Length: 313
Image (tube, rainbow, N blue to C red; front, side, top):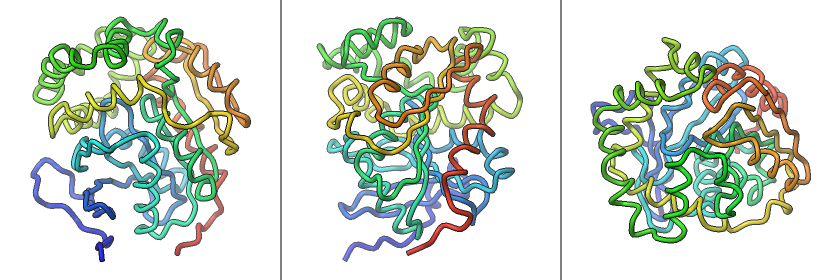
């Protein structure tokens, strides 16, 4: 029998003491960290692309204030979660369901930020009986459609194009230099990101409480190299394996009007395609400023979908 008990992971000096790994039914290890209140209302966090479980630490002040338990999970190949070639958007709900069972969490809400958006939607599609609500913040749309890459920054447009048309070029162009910089010198990469950001994003990214967790998440994303990021490039750039029209769960779409990483056209498309969507367009916010400036509102709405005490199995 596969042991699904919680296993604290202490083999890596750079991993924070709160990180835990569980063994999944196929033998893989799945890593996660928790932020907020240990017995609070549970919200599972799907990190961006490329990123790691450490990204959610930015939201911890709001989680504490709102009485929430934020469970942030490394996707396969990121941070301390084992990589698998079988990782797909449609497979992700199975991993989270196993983790939720181990944690004794019967029902929970889910939050997907940026590249975590499609994963949150995959869960809303596959396990609606376990979810109370879903939210996307600057959530990535179907970049396998030509219109969806219009308005994105050139490196993202080109990367998604290669992932769909010439995947063999991804590694030499995207899988060596950028991961080396972000994995080995994340402070420099973060400074470049900040310098290239518009005013709204720059103001958020330079806040002293924001920089450390995002730099740490950047480094952690490439702990195992670039394999996970290259794999996900292809996942995003090809059909996701489920129909948005079949998602009956309420989904709130938070979108910055000044977002050039994931343009507002993505949120508008998702809002039209999802049967029970609620689009919240903030015209003066960017890709990074939105989750930072509106963390209380975003988490508060998700938390309101959960009962005061969530039953355990």
